[in-house]
Length: 292
Image (cartoon, rainbow, N blue to C red; front, top):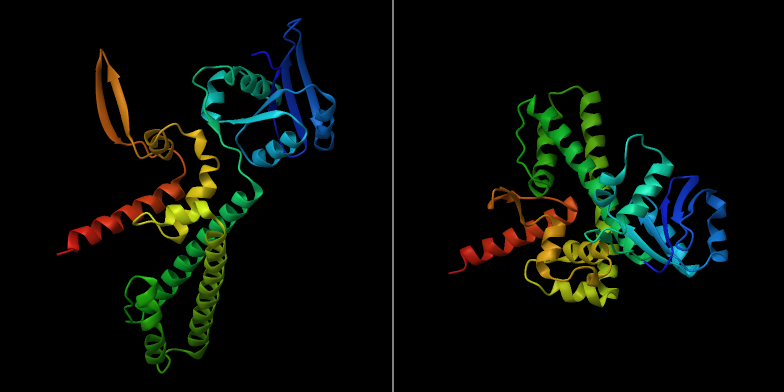
């Protein structure tokens, strides 16, 4: 590569750089504190490679503003080049080595808007887990006293009030009050989820890319916004099959002696987005199956 290459290992407070002078072959190892990263503006334009991890997109945007070419490399491409003892310097050297391999895989740099939408998805997913945990706890407690509630949140909301009314006459008041408080907490979490979904709908309305994806059968609000935000730059993928492989929707392969066996789905990549897409596909198949 004619452009100087810099491998950067980032952390919370200390960053490690690894570079090789193209003319002299001298190896340069530099340790920077967080506040000294802006000194990159004094260097010549370089290809800065960062392993895709926490805060990597933020620093990629910052270094781009300083005039450098920045790439985020997949951790799977870096790992084979970490030899023996692991350290920040060894990681930076491995990043520098991995980027120069012909089969190196990169991650598209996300904008702040895309990361903001993904943050809303992560918060919603966490609240969904909390709601499931709380409804299951309330359902199991009532089951011990002879009340059986159907699975699913919609059925739960219809059956919980009559169940609490039936048990309030024969159970201790302290337990009945606690069960009612648990129900209020579940309703509050559900309201928070509804607020997040309204904010995601605003993101869908303001994004032409999301609107185009939402026109695909089986793709709704969550899938459209999560897809656009997770992909980043669609030009990263050269074909639809490459996108499917990145998402883990292609079969794993194993072979020897010229014979290749196709196994189940690889399930690599983003689990959250893959689950949304598979749910949408199942919904479309179900509609087609029941269509007369």
